[in-house]
Length: 345
Image 1 (cartoon, rainbow, N blue to C red):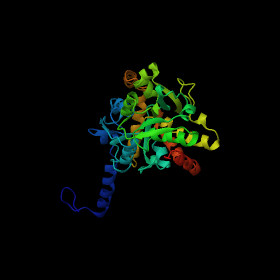
Image 2 (image 1 turned 180 degrees about the horizontal axis):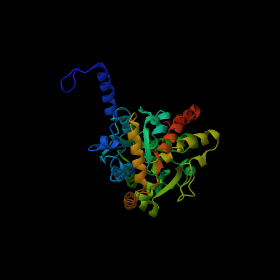
Image 3 (image 1 turned 120 degrees about the vertical axis):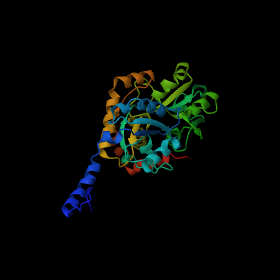
Image 4 (image 1 turned 60 degrees about the vertical axis):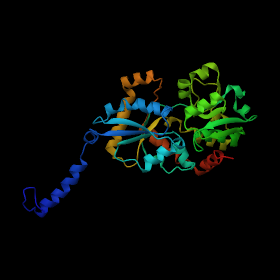
């Protein structure tokens, strides 16, 4: 081997050169890597949903705090209540830090309960942080006369749903198989907004999942006009605005039900979380996490969030990572009960 001037290299020089070159390549800083690049922000729902709204809000501000200031482009990837986007992010997305994703908070629970077509490993994602979180609600149209879970045991109520594996389906099924409600699923709507339209048209009577933040933000007129009744909230604590609506855990009648209901409710703090795929270099993971944390405190971002009626209740990525690892380590017997109770009859 010869040096750039054409002279033969000695063995010691060649050894030194081979040692230096990889080190130089690996020494590229986070700023150098991201400068001039674009980050793809994948949203596991259609453009009408709450995940899309918060992702676009974040995309307008996050880049300012990422070294190198890459541009951020939002791309929707709806399908199977977010499972499609989670599978893609886990198995097919670039693992260099140029892909971020946000999808249904239920992904860890879907994984351990073996919902159809889940092939990702939640704990192997790098969780960046959660922008906000809010209890999930089971809601039905007031025209049904159903005001409580007990009422729903006495008459059939049709519930609109996107896919068989999502919480729009699994929450009603769980209630059917434990408390004896009579929810009947109508599956196949292309998005949550279409389910809302179906409720208004009388095609279906309700939804098995509607976050409190989204409901009071996008369907405030439903609340004002008394269009819907909230039967139960899925969360470890009641929303301050809903002190009289029971949590799912409140409805547990024995230790087994309470354990399963707690498991099902434990993903609420995950909320609107963002992840990087597995194997992204650690310095880039840390840079994106710190950029996210700083954005959550940024006055411009917070002002923008207020304009968009988005409540910011941020949770750090490290905290979400620990929570996800706890969920996927749930005792098998609890998971088994949850699988059985959230499956179709």
